[in-house]
Amino acid sequence: MNSLKALQDSFQRAVVEGDDAVLAELLDSSKEKRDILLGVYRNAYVLRLVEFLTNDYEKLRTLLGDDQFDAMARAYIKANPSHTRNARWFGRHLPGFLAASAPYSDTPALADLAALEMALNDVFDAQDAPALAMEDLASLPGEDWAGLTFTPHPAVRRLTLTSNATEIWRALNEDTEPPAVSPLAEPAQLILYRSEAMATFRILAGDEAMMWDEAAQAVSFSALCEMLAAYAGEDEAPLRAATYLKGWIDAGMLAAPAT
Image 1 (cartoon, helix red, strand yellow):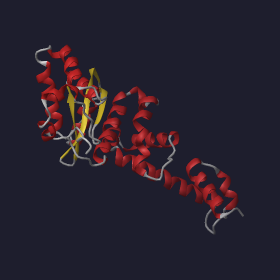
Image 2: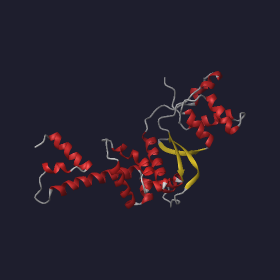
Image 3: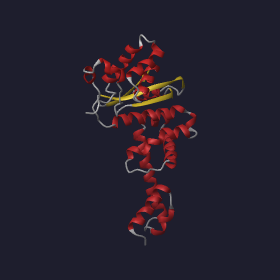
Image 4: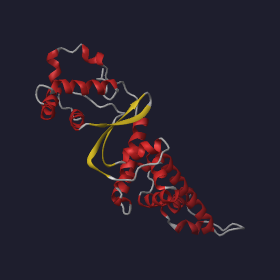
């Protein structure tokens, strides 16, 4: 007989990885064979993981339907065994799995919808942190604005989607019939953030998306204005930059400076 820990490890491998070595340590019951009993544990484990995915990707499940979602979830479980005790992170690779694995990769909207749902979950669960306020900038001398840099709030995510996944998500969120999946003529640039304790998103214009992405890399405000000049012209760029900045601050999308 192996030690208790060795037996536990062997049983875990049997359930998680399909290793049958533990059967040598088990006994048949009075009513059923040991392999059948082990199968019950394996099936229960998989069903639990499917449940986690269902909870994290409700819109995707609705779009696919129960049977197709179940088949997809089992394929994901086989390709991505759980390596963490926290179920919150088990489905984190699903968007990438859908984007890279046939037949799901043939429909990019599936990966896009999964990425959107995951990002919304991440935004909702993100740590609390003070947000930058207009008052934090009001006292800055004018000469300091040129070198000003910004830090995204922890509860902000950026996505680029190539399909109409946002329209599908909105329809499903309103319990209406979703549109047929389709590609976009131009990728959609999304910003996701927390508003009044709820995760939300909006689509960015091309110049705002560029400005946000550069600001997130600690590019200075003066450099951001120079970049925006390619979109709006030199005369309008500072005002447009200030307008976008105020919108980010009002939405709580920037982190307050460390004190």
